[in-house]
Amino acid sequence: MNAVDKSLTQEQESRIIAASISEASVKFGTLTALRDISLEIDSGDFYTILGPSGCGKSTLLRLVSDLVPPASGSVKIFGKSTEAARLAREFAFVFQDSTLLPWRNALKNVELPLEIGRKRNIKLPTGDRTPHELLELVGLKGREDALPHELSGGMRQRVAIARALVCQPKLLLMDEPFGALDEMTRDHLNLQLLDIWKETGTTILFVTHSIPEAIFLGQKVLMLKANPGRVKDVINIDLPMPRKIALREDPSFNNYCSQLRKLLEDC
Amino acid sequence: MSTSETTIAKSSYRLSGHTVKRLYNFSIPLGTAIALLLIWQLGVRIFNVPIYIAPAPSDVADIFYREFPLLMRNFWPTFMESVAGFFIGNLTAVLIAIAFVHSRLVERAFFPIAVFINTIPILAIAPILVLIFGPGMTAKVVIAALICFFPTLVNMVRGLQSVSPQALELARILSASKSEVFWKIRLPSSLPFMFSALKIASTTCVIGAIVGEWIGANVGLGALIIESTFNFRAPLLYATVFISSGLSVLLFVSVTIAEKLIIRW
Ligand SMILES: Nc1ncnc2c1ncn2[C@@H]1O[C@H](COP(=O)(O)OP(=O)(O)OP(=O)(O)O)[C@@H](O)[C@H]1O
Ligand SMILES: [Mg+2]
Image 1 (cartoon, each protein chain N blue to C red):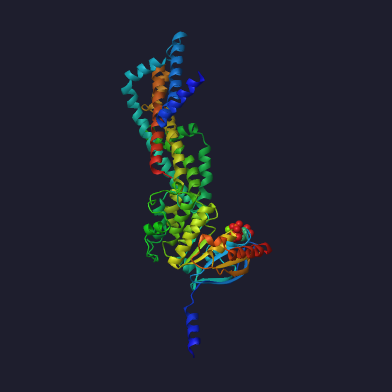
Image 2 (cartoon, chains in turn green, purple):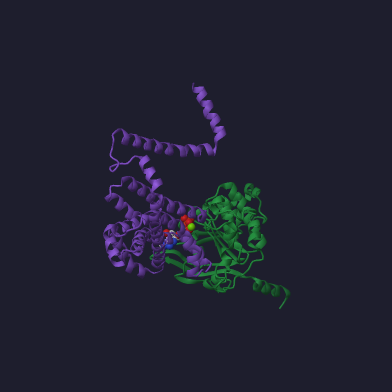
C-alpha cells in the first residue's frame, strides 16, 4: 500500500456523515410530500435549501428532526436513528418565528433545553458555553432579563439561536429563521450566523426563500422541486469563506444568483 | 381667542404628560357620578318622594354611618362565603379542566354533564342546595362555587389548549415528557385565560352567596337585603346593596392586582 492510498483511506475514515438520508419518502395521507430523497451531509457542512413554496423544505427538516416519520427509506443522524439522536440532543431546531416562551426572559428561554429532561436524568450534552455567554455570542449581552415582547423580531430570533446552541448541537436545522426580518437585520444576522458556524464547527441545514441568502450562507445549495418533493440538484458554491457583505457585488456571486434563479424557474 | 386657546392647550401639554391626563380621565366619570347623585338628591327632595320608596343619598349616607356595625356584621359572612366559594369553585374547575385536557375520555364523559348543570338557572338550583346542605354557610359556599365553576372550566380548557403547535414541536425536539410540557408550557400559557375567568368569578361568586342567603339565612348581606325590603327600611336596603357591590369590587380589584403581578408578558 503506497502513501497516497493510505492517506485516501484515512480521509475516508475521518469523514463523518452528519445526516444520511436514503430513499426517504414522506406522506401526509395520500399526499406525497417528499419522494425518494437520498442525501449525505458531511459533518461541518453548511447547506442551504431552496425550492418553490410547498415543495417540502420544511418537511425535509421535520423528517431529519424526527417530527415526521419517513413512509419509506431511512434517516440516520451521526449513524443513529433520528429518535436516538433526538434523545441525545444531537440536533437543534430554529423555527421561522422564534417560538420563545413569552413568560420567560431571554436568559430563561436559553436555559429551557437544560431544564427539560434534567429530572429524568437524560444525559444532556453540556456545551462549553454558558447561557450567558451564548447571549453574548449573539450580541444580546445586557438583555438577559428582557421578556420576548420587549425584544425586536431580530433579537428574538437571536435568542432562539442561542437556545438552539445551548446543548452544543452537532446539527443545526433552521427553517427560514430570518424570513420575517428586514434586509439590514437579515444581513447582520447572516454574518453572525457564519461566525457562529465557524466557531462551533456545527453542521447547518438552512431553509430559505431568498436566492442571495442561500448563496451568501451556503457552501452547498440543495435545490428541491415540487409535486412530489425531490432533490433537483446540489450546487457547490465556490466562494471564499469568511464571507463579507461586499461579496454581494461580486460578479461570481451574481452568476450564482442567475444560475439558481433559472434552476428554480424550471422546478 | 383661538390663539389663547392654543396657548393654553400647548402649555398644559408641556406641563402635563401623564398626571394631567390621568386626572382628566378620572375626573370625568367622578364628576358625572357626583352630578347624578346631586340630581337624585334634589329630585327626591323637590318631588317629596317618601323615604320608604326612594331615599335620598343623604339618607343612605346617614344610615350607613349609624348602622355601620350592623352592616359589617352582615358583611363578613357574605365575604367568607364568597371567597370560599371562589376558591373551591375555581380550584375544582381548574382541576377538571386539566383532567379534560389530559384525557379525551374524561372530557367526553363529563363535559355534557357540566354543560347541563350550567343550564340550570342558579335561582332554581339554590333552594335544592339549601335543602341538601341546610341553612348554614355550606349551602351558600356551594352556590357561590357552582356559579364560578363553569366559566372557569371553559376558559381553562381553552387556555390549556392554546399552546402553539410550534411550542409543542419545540418540546418534542427537546424530548420533553408529558409532565414537563404541562408544567413548563401548557400551564403558564393558560394563565391569561385563567385570570380572565377569575375576574368573572370574582363578581359572580358574590351573586351566588347573596342568592343563597335570600333563600334561607339570618345573617349575611342577602339576608339583610330581604329583611330591610320587608320592613320598608329603604335607606338600609340601599346601603346594603352599596356594600354588596363594594364586596364585588374588592374581589375584582384583588384578582386584577394578582394578575398584574403574575402576568407580565
Ligand atoms: N402536517 C401536514 N399535514 C398535511 N400536509 C402537510 C403537512 N405539512 C406539510 N404538508 C404538505 O406537504 C407539502 C410540503 O409542505 P412544506 O411545509 O414542507 O413546504 P415548504 O417547502 O416548507 O413550503 P414553504 O416554502 O411555503 O414553507 C405541502 O403540499 C403541504 O401542504
Ligand atoms: Mg416551510
